[in-house]
Length: 408
Image 1: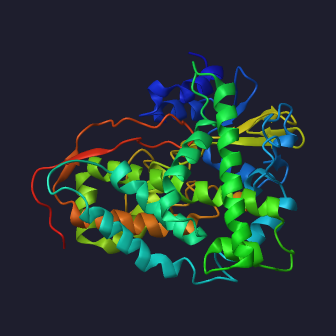
Image 2: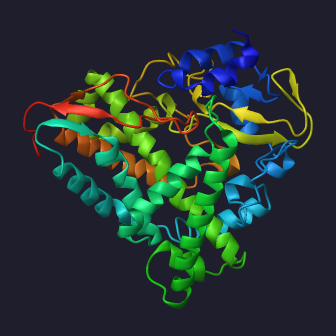
Image 3: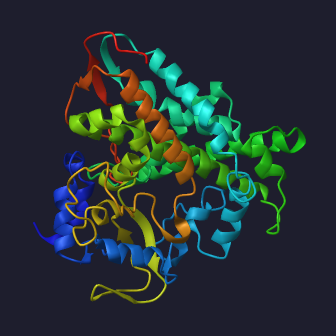
């Protein structure tokens, strides 16, 4: 096959379990124009430079073929889909109740709650038999955490999951399915979630509590206050992004560790090594494989190739994370790897907003699973994967237990 079909092959579900040979092909061919007009970039240094390049836009309106649903759902675009100065203003307002310098202790204060949730979920596992680490643990942990953080009632989580699944499916470019139907369903789900969160925010304006929705609804800073539309789109973003990528990080993490029993045993014996192991997991099996929503504001040259103004520019983070020009022995999982400046959370002004929370959740979750599941083994390898090539991770991760596990 020719390099101009790489994106179609990456998106093909038959390659979901192992896209890394395709990423190696991408790196060998440099910057590759696809048959649909998009440009793929898969080398580390070029991706890193583009993530910091102000000539590269995240605003769909900068593209020659902007997403027709970009402003059709009645919600202001979320800040990850905007450029500065709009992006900077909205991100600063969203950060005030989330982290430093204005709320420096909010994430650290969640440590105890995250630990309790993780232990309660594991307590519910059967002593033997099959467990689905996605449905039984990796999904309910982060969605419970972000819902409590925002102030979403626990009884509404089934609706949140249905809306989120529809929104994520809207980004699925799987061949053979009707993309227009997926986009319409995603738009309807985003509207429904926006109305729901907007209603909660309105309640918190009059009756604030200690959650982030209350802080976002009532907080004033040098940048002013979020409008109701901005608050709604920000809340939708935080609720979806606040758990979707962490589900994949935990699930990809356990899958990788179960495939590497020596590393698993070392981490089980020394839980203090887990922070470095999480960084390696973000490099080795990142939850976000590529960023599809970029375009140059002017013609730019990338590795000797001119990418024209407005062309779709796709940055394949997972490929950059395996670039041998940047990482020694990049296809080897090494939880003790040094100098691990991966692209797992992106870089530049759009660096993942929730990275500190995701890191803490992953460390706690994986240490708890290693300590409590000393008898688990993979029931399927590879497991069934989610449809999305962008947010890549197992849809189910079945493991089996033969004997009663220790509870430590």
